[in-house]
Length: 122
Ligand SMILES: [Zn+2]
Image (cartoon, rainbow, N blue to C red):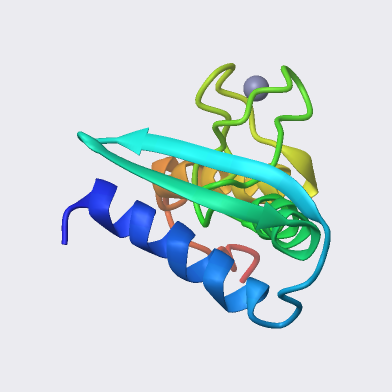
C-alpha cells in the first residue's frame, strides 16, 4: 500500500472506529483530505474530532529528544548533542560529553618513565 493510500485508509478506519461508539453525537463538520490524486471526505462527530486531536498531540516521534537548552533547536542526536549549535544538552548530554573527553584524554597519557620501583636508599 502506498503512503497516501495508507494515510487515507488510516483516517477512514480511525473515524469509523470512534464514530461507531456514539453514532448520534453532534456533528462538527466535514474533513476533506486530498492526497495523491485521491480524496477522502469524513463526516466528523465531536468524539472523532476530539480523538483525532488527542491522537495527534500524543504522538511522540522516537527521533525527538526534546529541545536544546542552549539554542532551543529541536534536532538533538542520540548522544544529546545539538545538531544546530553543537553543544551537549542537559545533564545527561553533559555527562556523555565529559565521559567522551575523559576517554580521549586517558588514551593520550603515556606510561610514566622509569616505572615505580625507586628504592635507591639501600
Ligand atoms: Zn542547540
